[in-house]
Amino acid sequence: MHIILKRHYIVRNSSLTIAFMCLSLLFAPARANNSDSVGASSVNKADGASTISVSVSYTSVSNGGGGGNGGGGATTSTTATGTVAPLCDYLPVGTGSDVAHDIRRAPSHPGARVPEEVYPDWEQHENESGQWYFFGCYRSRASSEEEYIKARDDAKSRPDVWVPDGEDPPAPEIDGEILAQAAWDAVDIPTPSIGTNPALGDSGATVVGLDTWVWADGDTPATVTATATAGPVTATVTATASGLSLSAPDSTPHCSGFGTPWQPGMVEGSSDCTIVFGRASAHRASQTTPLRTSATYDVSYTATDGSSGALDPVTVTSTTELPVTEIQTVNVPTPNH
Image (cartoon, rainbow, N blue to C red):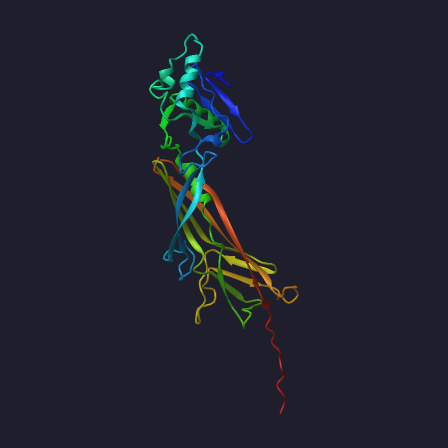
């Protein structure tokens, strides 16, 4: 079916709404109703999203503990895979012969722009193997109606492009914020791993009424960075946690950092992360008290397109089942002689 294209119109299907521009009122090939027809590129997915490689590094809490950002810890690196969906992308229109056929059948309209303004050199490509692509914007991917309208209006100035068989359409344009969020979505932050003291016997029990030292061990990152590139834009995301947060039943936590690993001879009160239990765990069915440990990461990004800003903070949490015991003293009277 062929339609007379107005200044812009909307194609709907069950999964998305694509709004795209036509630069004239001429009769043109009907646009593909389904973005699943986008193809050919090894990095373009059927839904218009692209696969990105994300370089991730984790800098662990320093073994020295003592709060702060854990600077001085070990750094490990890995690679993650994510997807990024551009707000606007090139989507297929039809073959050279399809376009030529419909242009020749198009009725004349006063003020209509000539076909060459929409399909440059269309006659030259009539019998060649390839596809015409138009630049379309996805309303559903815009963060606001204002953002969508701006992108749609910018798209009006773009003529369709001819892509020979075996070649990819122009790379989608992805701004730094969208790329940063996609990179960050691909990252898994390990949940906090901790050590505690006192740690009595094989069970590692702590004691009612004493400061229980809690510290993040080497598997807990203080800083996470993620970097990804899409087209000409590279985005780097940095996430930093300033310490742990503790909670447990029948307890009073005091934690303002990542804690200090306990060693013999250390002075009581010298750790910035402790918890005092007010009751033993013997009354619990598990014979342990659940110690909930969280780390909250503040997240920011910078990108080579000049954009920068903050992303939503992320909190990761783990639970340690900790036995809590009591130490009782018995006063034995001194016998009289």
